[in-house]
Image 1 (cartoon, rainbow over the protein chains, first blue to last red):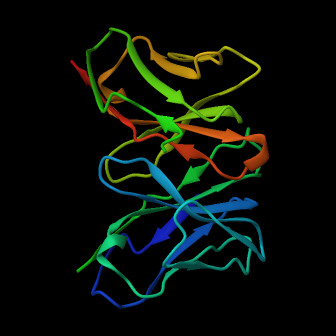
Image 2: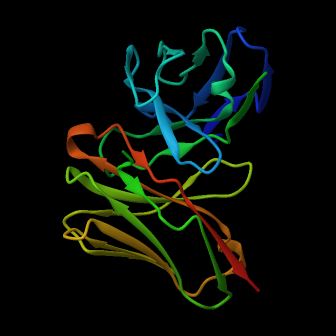
Length: 114
Length: 113
């Protein structure tokens, strides 16, 4: 059981480039989300999805796009990378949107934008 | 405005002693609280949670206390072990936004042998 898998682990982009961070879970979880973590700060919610075909914005959605065509996959797209998007990105999933359902996180993607 | 605050960026304790990590929140709609633990180069992992209908929840060496009137919760680790050295995040969610957890900035715990 792999849990939540994120690829790549590391990525360096030039300003203006676009890329997709991949996230897949094999737990048949209904809920998936993307967070970013900046140094000395907590995790901030970018986008989330409560099921296939349904996505919504989190706290810091600007500059990012998501889609949820299957239950398993929730890719995060950077449309035109900016240095302010240098961060560690975590994908997370949970069994349901119920408050008693804790998040399962991937191991993160460390992104540097130069 | 930060709705979940962990005011101590770091904490150092001796092995075998108690570790107390604190968390304050401002949003009175929050009614479920979770603690996550994070090792370097890994994602956070769930540790323990508490609902607002309780004031204490215990799981082995870990106990979370909730003081709703003070909007304060704390995580107690007894006894602390070197393997507990990690970053601990407090998170909160509300029934009205069940899909969205708000995280604090984390506290780095170092347990010295």
